[in-house]
Amino acid sequence: MTHMHFHRLASDCLLQPEIEAKLAATHVAEGWLAGGELRFDVPEPPVPADAVRFPPRPLLVEPRELPRRSLHTPEGRIAFLHAVAHIEFTAILLAWDIAYRFRGLPDAFYRDWLGVAIEEARHFKAVRARLRSLGADYGDLPAHRGLWELAGQTAGDVLHRLALVPRFMEARGLDVTPAMIDKLRAAGDADSVAVLELILREEIGHVALGSRWFRHVAGARGLDAEHTYFALIQRYIHGGVRGPFNRAARRQAGFSETELARLDGLGAAAP
Image 1 (tube, rainbow, N blue to C red):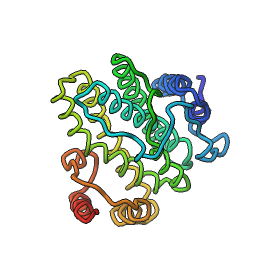
Image 2: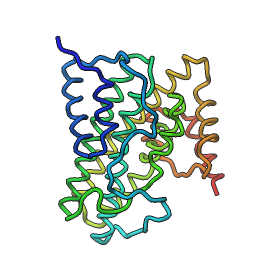
Image 3: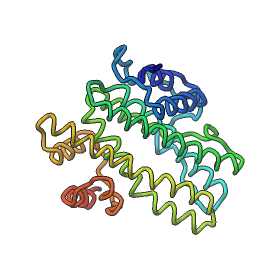
């Protein structure tokens, strides 16, 4: 049987700047994963997180430089969908990177996060298709610079990455997406609603994987997972924790009742 090294495919995705090359590498990996022919032994050490390449467009700017627009205008919906496309594109790289960067974990860890990368690529393609139907494309507008920052900050420890990316950053998407769906529905944009509903359903599973592997790694280190999670939030998240929280979705994604209560407390205390 022919085998393919997972880390070779990961390098193909992470180190090439072109959007289509990243999507193609993810598609190829999907075939190898489905065939059970991927090897996860390590051929070489990972490159630094800052070596991961992004396409030349969109222009990346600070969040405050992105204008706020109404979803009741075509321009506003395009700007919103462009922002979602950037989140989903970055999520492809985040899923690849967590599987590529951290070594010595069970093979199931790598299969799980490759599966996430494959689903994130599907989300990106769906949002991009909707953008194109509106006469725009990914890269036409500036995008949020900060989405990759936590990846760099947590590149030295998988426990930190699991806490801050799937269990904090992506979990926040579970909180805000239902309101965005309601606004798009009120604007009469059923096609965009369908795309966001797909993303929300599958993102619950992604955050749930983050919860499961976070507790696995914390337990292997003899750490209390809940205490460690909130200590890491305090260490990395300096702008405060914002509510409200989608408690039903977060429960499905592996958040305990005590975690939800503590998040509520942090949200109430946020400036």
